[in-house]
Image (cartoon, rainbow, N blue to C red):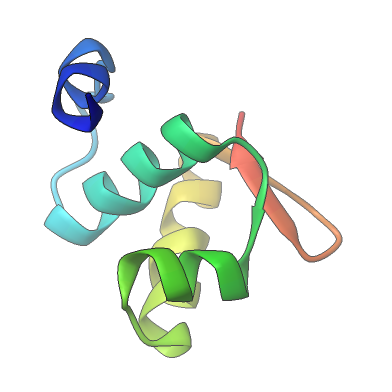
Length: 72
């Protein structure tokens, strides 16, 4: 089921980093999430997540609202 859903999501062409793609897919499937939810769901360190999220935000692919992140 997850693989089918992930296959239906199209990734923006500017996403080159595997981690950025992973975070983008996670947000696509889970909606608005906190950094802790990303950390737990993806088993990534917060420092890595903040770096990826900053890049995605700079590309206008995600938005930050308080402590939550979502696709733009």
